[in-house]
Amino acid sequence: MEGQLPQRLCGRALSQADVEAIRREVGLADPRNRAEIARRVCRVLDWTNAVGEPKLMSARVGLLLRQAKLGEGGSDVDGETERKPSM
Image (cartoon, rainbow, N blue to C red; front, side):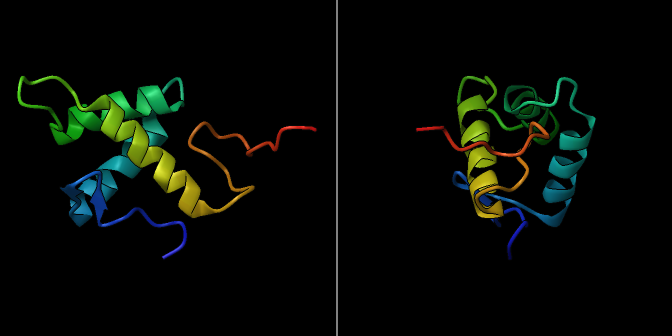
């Protein structure tokens, strides 16, 4: 399961097509950061709230959870390696 997207993302069930769409949007995002990826994912999955606004915070939380599942020191969605703060 390591390195895989969860089957549910902040309450939303994900199909295999959704997972593939998310991976595609991560690869296409420019700039490649969580905010841009969240905007792209919400648009492609039509992930909106009751008033039709993109669920950007839920998407960002999902991306952070995915990063955490990759493990410490793994590559994040920004394409950089996590850095531990110096003490």
